[in-house]
Amino acid sequence: MTVDANISKPEIRIAQSEYERLVGLANAVSDREPELSDFLLSELERAEVVPDTQLGDDTIRMGAGVRYVTETGAVRDVVLVYPGEADISAGKISILTPIGAALIGLSSGQSIDWQARDGRNHRLTVKSVHFSGVDSQVR
Image (cartoon, rainbow, N blue to C red):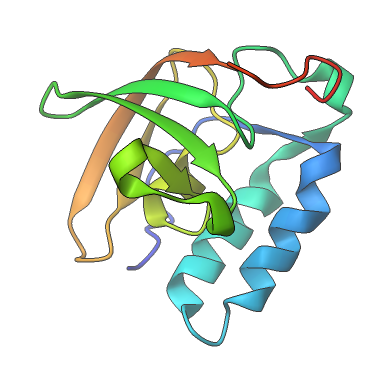
């Protein structure tokens, strides 16, 4: 997985309460998965870090349910989670995956190009973001 600096990336926003933990996770996997670590760190570095109360309900953060459409027109519903909660069969996607790192901080209507572990490039567009079962005070 390589990051193409020439690809235009959308503006993203990260909740202040999640930023340090996400940086820590990226650093923790840097020896095992350096390219994934670099990709997540680059996403976090370019993000605007905002107080949790200023992060809109349409912005993807940890625990968010996301509906997106792929470049082939396939619609997917996933939840962005921390690694210990990941379960592909239940649609729970870890932040420590290429698609998880690509999703963080996006808002409804935004698109991003990302590269899978096999080197193939993909594009997704966020259709909606929801927070089922997430305490509104946490968001």
